[in-house]
Amino acid sequence: MEKCIVLTSGGLDSTTTLAIAKNLGFELYALTFDYGQRHKYEINSAKKVSEYFAVKEHRIIVIDLRAFGGSALTDDIDVPVHEEAGHIDRNSIPVTYVPARNTIFLAYALAWAEVIRAHDIFTGVSSLDYSGYPDCRPEYIEAFQKMANLATKEAVEGNPVNICAPLLFLDKADTIRKGIELGVDYSITHSCYNPTPSGLACGVCDSCLLRRKGFLEAGIEDPTRYAD
Amino acid sequence: MEKCIVLTSGGLDSTTTLAIAKNLGFELYALTFDYGQRHKYEINSAKKVSEYFAVKEHRIIVIDLRAFGGSALTDDIDVPVHEEAGHIDRNSIPVTYVPARNTIFLAYALAWAEVIRAHDIFTGVSSLDYSGYPDCRPEYIEAFQKMANLATKEAVEGNPVNICAPLLFLDKADTIRKGIELGVDYSITHSCYNPTPSGLACGVCDSCLLRRKGFLEAGIEDPTRYAD
Image (cartoon, rainbow over all chains, first blue to last red):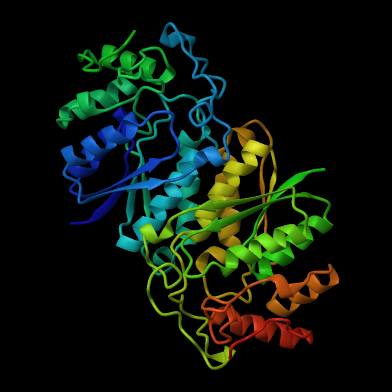
């Protein structure tokens, strides 16, 4: 069985990505980052999801992105709320952008991949239904793969790595349809940037809006418990 | 004054790189990684060097590369010793290679650069007198820069980042000559992979051999205290 690494946040996209990788016959190695998020619900969901897919190994790496700051997800900046999905401005990069986040995540994945001799790294980024982050675009993924294949001993010795982004050209509704087809239980996933103290999704952040809109468009009942 | 980030290990190369960046008129932000090295002497040298150059800020980021392993520098594998520099096999990648190390270091530097709005990241990698690591080659540095300029909000908004590797085509002797010209005190730097408990350089690891050979070829007295 070929090994693969899957960046696993506990959210809807990375969970669907795990399902896709499993369906392709890979042995799953889940990699989660505890990066000073404002909430720990993501980590708990990542654990549940990793158990659900019976991954071979689940590593949680603590990285202190708060040391640098620069994002509403790591600093004490308010996460913006919206009344409806149409309010999201797709032409500007929001304050929830975390500087170089995907580059740091993929760099760690590259290190682990080399050590366990995995040659496929899966990420759930999408260039369609996303929040305007530059490191979710196809040209970024392609450039990372090129760089990665010049970086490692494993690649230089003839075993290049693939950065697999199966949701890159899927919108949220298509992602959900794909996941349901593969048997994903979305009730154990977590998308909200700003959950209530008891763990309910706020329902009004970018991430909640995209999730709600996705289920609505897919015609599938959203199992999430929203506060609003 | 333009800000720049300098990857600062406390070694000969990164110290020379700090001197070059300072001489170019940059305001210096030093970035050091505590990555489970087998010795803490590197970190102490990085602190001394940062003070010496009166950097604006020195950040030490703890990252656990031991979580993945795969290197003599992070695991309990013996660091190889050699009797003379000629014994180093330049055609194979040694066990001191750390998987994806420079990619992880530069990814963090990219994050910090974006937050403080620095557009130059300096690294002391050399493609000549090095230990055969793939992530010290010009094609790697170029690919990282391309990827970085697709990754960040700052780049997308028209402020690209430069990955500056001023030692890329210098051998160790030229690096030392350059540093001496710029007033570097090499006695505060640390190169050894395998120092004695009292902090003397072993004198026989790859890194010591390259350092010794460099001073010898440059015709400059080596201020290092060697055990052997």
